[in-house]
Length: 76
Image 1 (cartoon, helix red, strand yellow):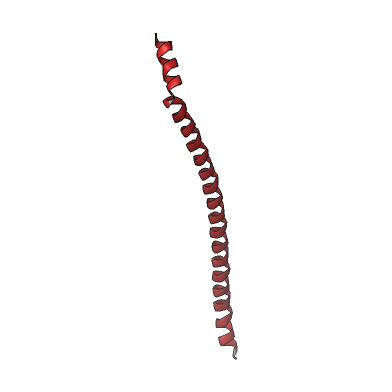
Image 2 (tube, one colour):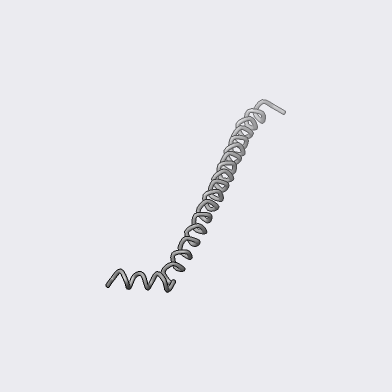
């Protein structure tokens, strides 16, 4: 291998190596962001489930006959 070929290969290897390192860093950040997103989604889903349960309780309370009777008594 002569000096001209070697002088040409060194920058090419450096550029390709830098590109590969950059791609690996980007891929790692994407995986981290995806994991954080999944955790946030789980937290939100748990909160939605809790809110649904509270709404069901409120609906039961409002539709009970005793509650409606108390409401009519309070109006009078």
